[in-house]
Image (tube, rainbow, N blue to C red; front, side, top):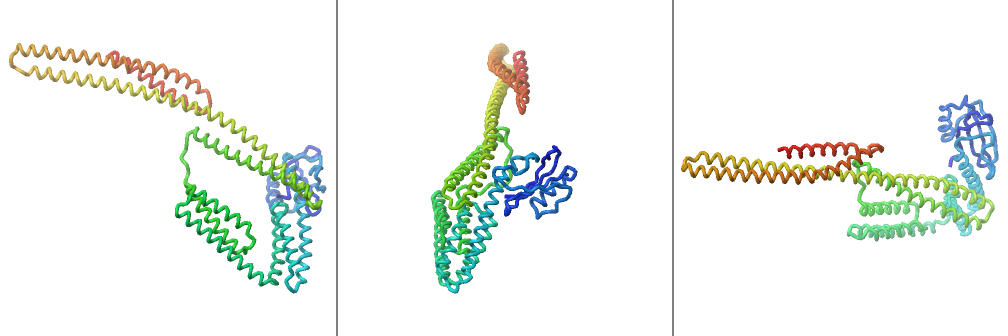
Length: 486
């Protein structure tokens, strides 16, 4: 949590100014500086954000005004004559800083207890079990506060470092117990490695992946609950456990593909965005549920606290959680609104995609019918060429003129019959094609009208499809007329 704020705002005279706020947790106070617009340039704002808020600090230039206020749960963090653009940031800082102050006081109380323990350990000449138990009890209380995140990491690290020093002194007095502890740690280390090796063997032999996951989760739970591991053994077991988890996951899900994905259509892109939004909504709902469970837990614990300081600390934590839930619920509302918009857009895109598919089917059907008519014409042409070739052959025969004449007449009659039948076939074919294509033209014209109407809507590709369909229909009509004229 940041202990400094830099905000744009205005003073009592409604003049634009830059406001800097800093928390003094030890004194439970806040320092407020305001800089007039003559000083508060954009460059100065960026410098304040970088060096003063997030950096090691800087000397604040003149002209400026300074104000000191007590940090209160009920009163506003800023005086009434100062207005800011981001009131939500100020409200959140006020709730968080209450927690910071109480957490600092809790840390100081633990530091005082630790100083008393340090004095007791320093006076020992031999190992004392009661001192060891007191040190362990103290560390258990600190661990509980760390797990509940009532102590900041740097405070917890300092307490841990000082406590480890005392434990180290006690372990020096307890060398034999240390040797036993090392022995127990080595045994636990070997058991973990043997169990992980067995999981790897089962994985190589083709065991079911869910079963392997369950075994690894049990080992992970045992690892976390184990109290007889040295730091070195714990690190080695963790590395091995983590590597085995990754190997099993890769076997189950496969390695992640590299490179960029190929571009999809607008429908596919919208569908991917919709699916991703559903995943994000699910995660947000889970996060809100966790916060509410944490809120219920804190409400329950606040009635069983031992001291006033811890009760105040939990009360501040309740406000932080409530503020966090409120912020997440607002985001969830926006995400659900986006979800409804995407659902409407998906429905529209799917409808347009279906219409385009129907238009493509009409065009393909027209092309197929036109190909059939062309094949029929080619068949008639082949029959005519064959008949002409027979007539030419008959003319070259000199024998029996009467018979030849009769033969010519017979051949001419056959040719006439053949041509007549072929022409009738062509006419029937063309009529059939014209009938089918006529129906398709009417359907296509209706589709074209719909496509032209859709051209007024944004992101529509219908005009291009409609023009293509219109050209195809026009070509089909010209071909039909040509066939009928022939």
